[in-house]
Length: 265
Image (cartoon, rainbow, N blue to C red; front, side, top):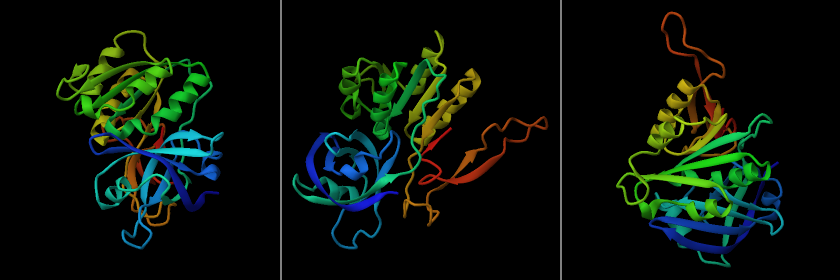
């Protein structure tokens, strides 16, 4: 059962160009939320904009009863969010969706994030550390100013490597370049990822060739957030599907990102 109501903004800062981190007091959500889940935010007090915005949970603190939302300004709704002040109120519904799962067999994990895709990965990394799973994080961004979460991840004692499109930090190129390089050595037995669809598609190809299973969190626009409107339906590969002898493409099916995901295996 998800919570829906007005919450108080207790912290809100711009952390990068067009990127903001908001912390809200939502004890009902904080005590139920799992890494990889999201909340649906209504930025205004009126019906304009009409639809809520899905925002990944970047931080979950049951002890303090707070959740943290890392978001990028991409339209009118998130622009309105960016203008909200501490002690103000915001309408939040959650936790929603299916989060990350950590199979018992994992001993070494590779976590890949692209751009704002780092948002849902922080709670996951905290869980991986809790279970003492050896973890390496590879991050990609357009440039140094858009590279998010490096210090926080290093603060967990987790190794981080980065790639930027313009070469202003780390490897010049794509984060998938780092993945290929990383797999040349001792391989992880599992991977997690969130980021732009082209990145996830390339990553899936690399991991499939290497025979490494994992989970990806998809970013998708959605209307209701509860599986009713079908606005976020996406095409996903059926679990266990294999290339046919005839050369035909693997079997696919359509699933709802809001309820079947956002995390898919």
